[in-house]
Amino acid sequence: MAHRPRKTGGARKTGTKGKAGSKPLGLLERLAQGPVICAEGYLFEFERRGYLQAGAYVPEIVLERPDLVEALHREFVHAGSDVVEAFTYYAHRAKLRMVGREGDLARINRTALRIARKVARSTGTLLAGDICNTSIYDPNESKSHKQARRIFDEQIEWAVEAGVDFIVAETYSFGGEALLALEAIKQSGRPAVVTLAIPRDGTTREGWNVADACRRLEAGGAAVVGLNCARGPDTTMPLLREIRAAVSCHVAALPVPYRTTAAEPVFQSLTDPSLPGNRAFPTALDPFLCNRYEIAEFGKEALALDVRYLGVCCGAGPHHIRSLAEALGRRPPASRYSPDMSKHILFGSDKRLWQKNLEYGRQTYGAAESAPR
Ligand SMILES: [Zn+2]
Image 1 (tube, protein in one colour):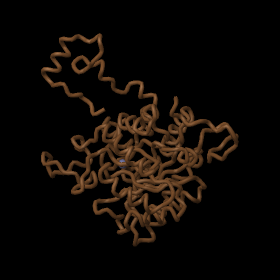
Image 2: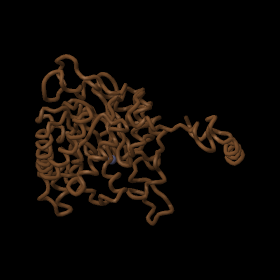
Image 3: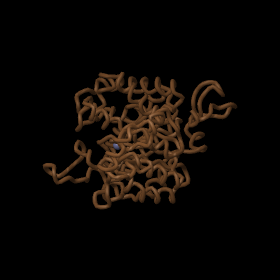
Image 4: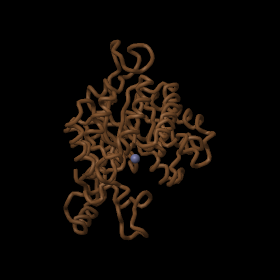
């Protein structure tokens, strides 16, 4: 496919193992050439499908239905993801303890990495390890820093053992916890992509503004810094501009595909009066879902700022990723089935269509085109 990055012809360092010339480009080389797409948000997708429980959000499906995890990775690659992120989000000690499965810690991590590796290596995409917010970090409790660091270290060790190309540290609302994760990744020698989930008030939970937080992460040696989760495209963009102006390294943006607003800037704050208690998060967000064209718009705007590590988080479906890829000028395999309304029974223009139906469509629904583009 035209969008697929070239294989290295020479002996340039790629950050991947293996003989020179035999591996696809590494993360930094791909970013030097242009955007890199990373699909995430597996938790929400499997929750919707009925294989994962909202609440603790532990990815037990990795052990129970590895076939489905592999299939979802493949769907996202088919739709244009350049990265297969191992499904180890919330597969850490503190979260597994929450569901009484701490004994499965090593097995769930190794299995998730093995599945992701299989898909990445068979599709020429990048394999990413994944660590995340620990839910036990307290900026004022040094004991919690040690516990968080242990969580990071053990997950990173399994990721390195699986031969990941880089490691994502994501969804931190404490800047200090993100820095701790970064230190742990740095020790592994793998490139680090560190993304913050900025809460309602627009700063990290300890009160750092995003520019400051990202500057610290860049100074700490992150290859890519930015935002993921929590905010939809509209409330991610203003913070993204601040980050882009503050750092010189690559910037990441992976919003949730929900219509957050200045008044309700994160998906946890979205309200729907039809619900008891009004809170739409996390299982009644459907009416706020962005359509694919909004995600495409976001991708173009972000890339215009030279934000190159792009994706969609909780709530993302393959149609969002395909739209993002197409907005960036790609044509992933799934584009074979991108819409062609010229063949629609009521709204089409194809000569083989039945005129009576087209006339009925015009009379009933008007002559306007049905899709924005
Ligand atoms: Zn998310």
